[in-house]
Length: 589
Image (tube, rainbow, N blue to C red):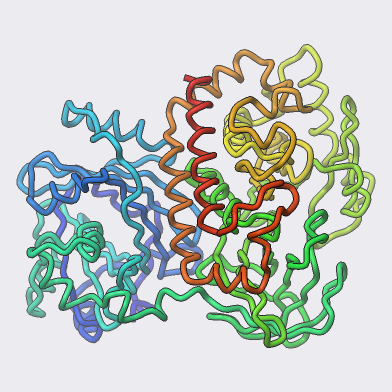
């Protein structure tokens, strides 16, 4: 319907941060008539016009922010973390209600509650409500239309944990400086009227805690979860294959929502191969066996993917939680989706469909991708070289090429060697290493106390001659999932004595930057919110997974304890992370 509209780029959009909003609900079949009455352009990015959104709203345990909005109190506010699914960009947003119904929105890519505190003190001369925590998750698809001085958003397939919008409805929101946009006039001509209090947050909370003022809207436009379980079911991936080798992918077929066709598949991992439940690497292929790209489960299109088994992580979520926390800081981390895998017609358990770490517009930005790894692993990977001071192997990561000319190898190795010499010498390392990225990387690795940090699975991109640490990868021995060594304890630093990270820690300026960055963040909400979201996504499938793989009642490396249930494992992770954050807070504030 919008394919015939002229496009507009993101850089041309009017932000309209101070505006008047109005929300309408339309039948889907009324959309062509609305578009015929508008002369707006449609937002287009990289050829896409429909974009996926995920938002997490924060509130107090007593739902103070929700009640303030339902009661239309003055000087009220909302705050949320929003993920742009197609790009992985995350923003933290604060929306204030001003005089005469105006909405004022502030947002940032960095920080969370520190930004909220700063905004409320500046605009309302007050502090945020105590005890804010994730209260609601919502996902939807959006098309954005724009004309001078106004914007119109069309939201489809609105989904909450407790219900979803009827498939024959869409939410239309107009945004303009005076509240009387051309789109408002067109909607009135179609007989539509603004829906008071029709915010996504109030509706989502209303599904859990019905209020009289919302019952009509909920009854007319929403379907309760109990009436539509299939909409929230974990997606299935069905793979048919012969014996799956450890290396060189064998041909197979894959059927799943949004994809049906050929793939190549192989077993992946190093220490994880000791477990019966294997992880796999898959490569999408066309009918001729050539590489193919596709957007799987709403993630940006690519051809290379990982099916992570989580065999030794009984929560099944440590990677998912760590990557989500990195994205909350504005850093790229692999996007993930829980799936249930059927292999050759037999249920094979819950897996995490994960983007592979590789260079690309939608993945890692840079000129080259490198990995710090263990010596025994380097021998079986791509070409590698050793650092001039510590002698640790550093692997060149490029799945498309296995060879390098000597000139290419030297061009990649030279900046790394220069950085290591500066780090261990008397000169400054800052011309060679992106300090902001290194600060976030060290904080995240310390936060989860990842055993492999700066030893293996440590990725760094070479960009403009500088080393940029990240993204995160492989957090199975993290979050207290260990029976020995420093990583089992929620207290104590892990990285102060390791190569590279130990030298960074010794720089007073770097330690000061760590403290300043930590003070600007509130990672407790990000971590606990990610655990809550993963728990909801896993609901209803963990029992079947652990029937297929009965490991809950026996110790499994690297842990030495068996807690007996998935719920007990998740509770342990939640408590361990809470203690870890409290300890780091005492050390860094």
